[in-house]
Length: 231
Image (cartoon, rainbow, N blue to C red; front, side, top):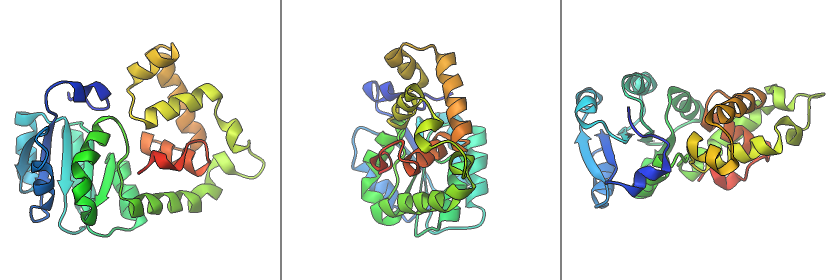
């Protein structure tokens, strides 16, 4: 398996990035400008599948030319075959597509207009961050706001937002959002990895989340984390 989520990945050899570039070469051009990335490019999802076992990338970037109904299914299938941090690039999107991509396993989402940010976004992704175009993060936060009335976390009669998770759990979530691995969080807070995992299960349950990205978004909406966590 890969070394996803470990910030120490950037201290060793250049990270291996598999780019599935279907956007006319813009993402490839942006990544080739960074000499500190070992890049391999596949022109389609089918050829990307073939490259996975050979390259064993540290991160995957899928650059779509537009958006299509099968994109989400293909990303899910890709991550079921090989687990690695994955970033999606495409043209304009709606909240439904972004949310579906996050649920499929995408760790970040850039619009084509922000492709110049790609090298830095890949580094952020490898540190465990959530790189997003500003307009995409706004879509996600707006959706979280619309859904907040349905969340157990903010139902009338329920606990106040700052009572949902403990101070220690907020520290854990903040470190996770900053890209630290479970091991690093445990070392920083003098906790075992199992204890960190136990706290995170509680955090996810209380915030109505099923992934790290959803937990971070919910925590931002509830003002448990700073909005700048998603950039």
